[in-house]
Amino acid sequence: MLLILHHKAIVTGSPDCSILATDVETGSAIARLENSHGAAVNRIVNLTESTVASGDDDGCVKVWDTRQRSCCNSFEAHEEYISDMTFASDSMKLLATSGDGTLSVCNLRSNKIQTQSEFSEDELLSVVIMKNGRKVICGTQTGTLLLYSWGFFKDCSDRFVDLSPNSVDALLKLDEDRVITGSENGLISLVGILPNRIIQPIAEHSEYPIERLAFSYDRKFLGSISHDQLLKLWDLDDLLQGSGNSKTQSAVADSDGDEMDVDDAMAKSSKGTKMKNTSKGQDFSNTSNFFADL
Image: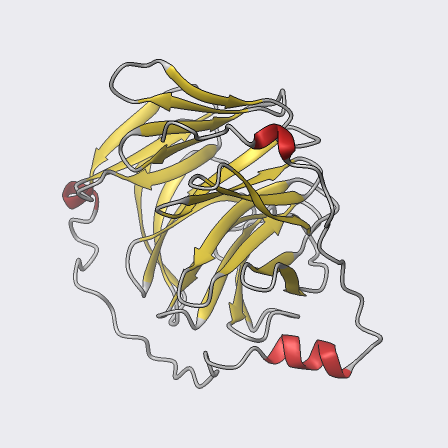
């Protein structure tokens, strides 16, 4: 897994449990953290100018502070691999999806797992936040998109099945109403959210599953990677020709409150709700020099 940090370094996670920071200009290693996780590092995302998050094959999520040069948060959030993560910067909440079929919401301020969804019928593979923070979209192994309302994470509020039966391995938000999907059949599609519809297929990477999608820094190009070990760049304007490049208006009113963390309040009032606790007391002393030169 690869992440570009501040246009100065590329941060990569490895099956050998290490995280490596590499200088973009020189290609030389800046820092290497051995045994950053107890299992293979499967996902890395940038959170802020000074923090990144990593997820491993055992379901553990860690947040790294590049200024303090250490791990500042650790969450034993899931029972299976972390497939994807996204960050809500306004509320300082990190959302993660997992092969165990659940979505977790980790509160970075309180260092706790705030809430976790009920088990889905299949693996959750990708996640984005849309509709100005009111909706969370998850891609699944069976190709169904699960729509969760912010603050109501226990169960999804809507399902979109038109991409089935091909798994949705990658999601990339184009704007608040449209998302770009990458499926296991190699097809890249533009999908509208609320109203839910496939606007059009826009590209075909190969016959292999799409691993990840990303924009160039100026959003002129869409990048896709697949199991064919090729990075392909697509002219975004060309891809969106005929798709109605202007944002579509949602025909469905969404009255779910985005200010209240309803699941968290319900969890406090119901002691019977099962919630995994944040892992504490771990020794991160071996990470003290990580990101020292960033």
